Length: 168
Image (cartoon, rainbow, N blue to C red; front, side, top):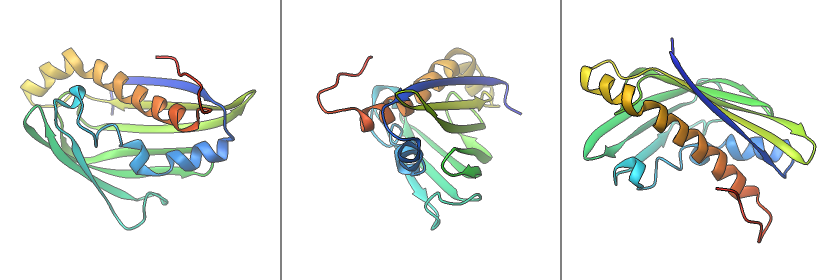
């Protein structure tokens, strides 16, 4: 059972069915981990989905790569999918991650005046090995917050009106 939680939301000027469809594509959800960045220590993860393309409960995805020169990997499975409202997934087995351990993530959308409210969350534990546990206590919250923000900002950018500037 996860002991830590981070979440966030953003108002998007698009119909909720379109926002759900965008986020129902796991490539969109994981895009912040598939690109080299300072938060990824100059490394990146490679995403390998199963044949269901994220469109069914039980969908599995594997991610592996390097972060700060360390080899990391995880397996995820979709645990909830209620189109066009919500979706959740969690790690299975023992992920090898740097600052967070097993986690559950998800999102839901709801119509709101002016568009759609997108809510994203992560419930997570710190890694179990002592080095990861120390890093998790120090940086896990920071990383989880970054991950949630990346997902929210990616959706906001996708549906932003041309020429409209997004808040930082």
